[in-house]
Image 1 (cartoon, rainbow, N blue to C red):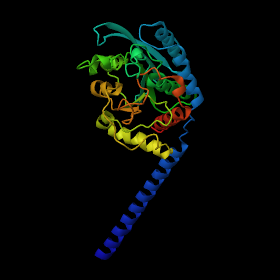
Image 2 (cartoon, rainbow, N blue to C red; image 1 turned 90 degrees about the vertical axis):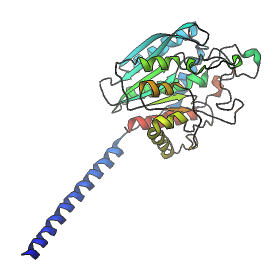
Image 3 (spheres, rainbow, N blue to C red; image 1 turned 45 degrees about the vertical axis):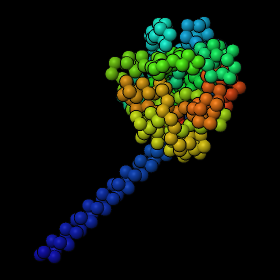
Image 4 (tube, helix red, strand yellow; image 1 turned 30 degrees about the vertical axis):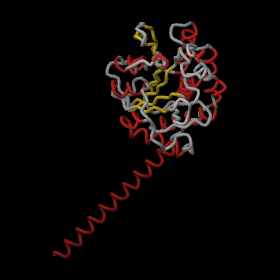
Amino acid sequence: MKRILTFLSFAVLFLMLSACGNSQHTSQQKTTKKQASVSVPDFNADSAYAYVAKQVSFGPRVPGTPAHKACENWLVKKFRAYSDTVIVQRFQAKTYDGVLRKGANIIASFEPNNPNRILLMAHWDSRPFADHDKNPKNWNKPIEAANDGASGVGVLLEMARQFHLHHPQVGVDIVLFDLEDWGPPKYLNFKNGDDFWALGAQYWSHHPQVPGYSAKFGILLDMVGAKNAQFPKEYFSRQYAGYYVNMIWRTARALGYDNYFININGDPIDDDHKYVNEIAGIPSVDIIQLDPNSSNGTFWEYWHTTHDTLDKIDKQTLKVVGQVLLNVVYTQ
């Protein structure tokens, strides 16, 4: 009797394990099919480049100038054509010189009722001072900011166009921060000036467009258009959003773009994402060109100079960054 019971027990166990194995196999097949069925649109670099060129055509987008206002109107019009909702968040913030200045964060949302959300960010203003220019006569000139601002916005505009054509399964919020680049000029040797950067991001992080707003993660684009750009893993991104850093860089490697998204740890950068991480509590990654071998020792060679012009923008770099981000969004 014991032998029969033992045999029956093993038989039942075998059948259970077989059923479990078949269930797991079926589940794996469904997962594989689901992954295979995800259709990621192609990022159009020509379109992104045109968006960058349009911003530059307004001239330096320094807050308070006619060029800034004209660019705002154009950005809002484009996002209204592509997204479900657009909000212009007007605010005031005091710059390093004690002046209270007006800013406008531009927020475009896709599938606003979807609780599963991704936050995409860039800054759309341009720096009032070319304080890192090699010619001191240019230090008080505003810059065109083709790369330092317009490139990230151009990529996000093309992504917005793709979201309109091919709806992702997640909700997406694109936030363009204003008054990001009005930090104290280098030649003033200003002390304790860190919090005078990223003023729009600081304001939004305290006052998001939706009370209690939350997103699964955020990605900030800053200087993502120069030829042969390299994006190391920025320090604050690793500290606050290490999982998502690795996910993005793995995606880039799978696409064959690991010569752009390099597997090297980068320095800490007081960029918009730092405040989104620390104040809004949203794990956020900064995709930013860092170059310790440049003349400024940290950033792209033409950062905060009069040479940050449209001729420095490379369509292939825009393509790489945009395609990586589309793959990240559409596979969530």
